[in-house]
Each structure stands twice: as structure tokens, then as C-alpha cells.
Length: 292
Image (cartoon, rainbow, N blue to C red):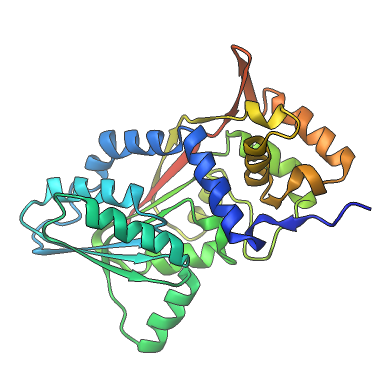
């Protein structure tokens, strides 16, 4: 009898290992960097007008790779301002990597960092209890909405903290990505904890429209090399499969029929492109910029 499937989040170390491998094998950060270079300057063009201090909130800042790039663009736009950057991140391991990254970076003068080891929900509860609502000039939530219980309420809450010229930036997997194909078909077979739900950029317009919010959408092309997933017993392939399915040891614990079907679908055009003997998973991202 195969052992029951368990959520990848039940083993934080393996989750981080699989996540880091995903970043290594995909163009995830490269395509975000391109967005930061090309489109972000237009998005932040007026967030700090007339301000001596710009307040930035990073929700689920992870190890800070993207945060520092975003901050450098804000700094380039407002060189005279002090930037107060606060980070909400539940993983102590990610926070310590973030702090290392800050310690090693040059050109962070005028930027103050504060880290809160908590989830978005814990942050909201704490701020409400303290009755000290702080407003922000820029809030970003990059690849983190999968980990909140009530997505529309979370977006509404952080949107309510925006200053009058501010922006809320959300990055998620795209509704046109392989994730959409995979999770729409198999999501109910994966052992999801209640702290994780599948959501893509295709789900947000409906939520935002019903909340009466104004927004712009961008599509970022990205891909991930998943060739190793098809090599029996390949350790990296097994880690990537865990990441794709959010399942701990998917290759070993999934029912054979489910594994067989999923592996078939992973090769197909709905999920991936086969090129030069390699399999590239469609990892496109959707960016949503919400006005105050």
C-alpha cells in the first residue's frame, strides 16, 4: 500500500530545496527582472511625488531578490527620498537570506529595512489590534496569494492601505500557463493544506471587478526546463515534480494511474513545449497593477 500523499509544505526544507531548484531551472526571476526594467518605472512614476519618505511594503518578500531590484528602481526615480521598506515573510530561513543579501549589497543608502516574521493574515491582525493603520506608497505581493485563505479579502485589505498616488503590484502564474492546465485538471487530486489554494492571473479580474477596483494586466513569458522529471529516479526531476504538484515525494507516493496521467499531460502542448530533445514547461506570469 503506497503511503498517502502529503503536502510539500509539510516539509519546509524540501519545499525550499524544490523552490530554489525551480528558480535555477526556470526564467522566473529573469522575466520579472525584465518587467522591473521595462515596465516598473512607468508604474512607480508618481508614487513619491512631493514626499521626503516613501513607504514600501513587501508582502511575502522571500529572500529579497526581487525586492532589491524594485527598490533600486524606486530609488532611481526618487534619489532624494528616504525609503522605508517593510517586509512581511513567515520563513525565518528566507528572512536570514534576505538580511545577508542586504548586508552584501552596495547602493542601499537611504533605504531602511524592517522585517516582520509573520504571514499576511498575522500582519493584518496585529496592525488591527494595535489600531495603528499605516499607509503605503507601494505594496507588492509577488507569488504569494496561493498561501492566503481568503484572496479577495487579502487584496481588499492591502488595497485599503494605499496612499492616494500609490500602487499595489501582484504577480501570479498566468491563466495561460502550464500551471493553469495542470492545476485545473489535477488540483483536487493533490494533498493541498488549507493554507494553499490554486489561483492564477485569470481569476483576479473577476475579484477586482466585483470590488470596483481599477487595474492594468501584463503577461510575462517564462519557461522551466522539466526534462529531468522524465528520467526515472532523477533526484532533481523528483524535486521539480514535488514543486509542480505541491506534493511531498510525488514520484514515490502518487497512485500509479495519477502519476502516469500527469506525466503524459506534462509533455503536452497545454503544459509544455518539446524542443531540441528537452521539455519546457510554460511558466508564464501575470502581473496586475491596482490603482488606489
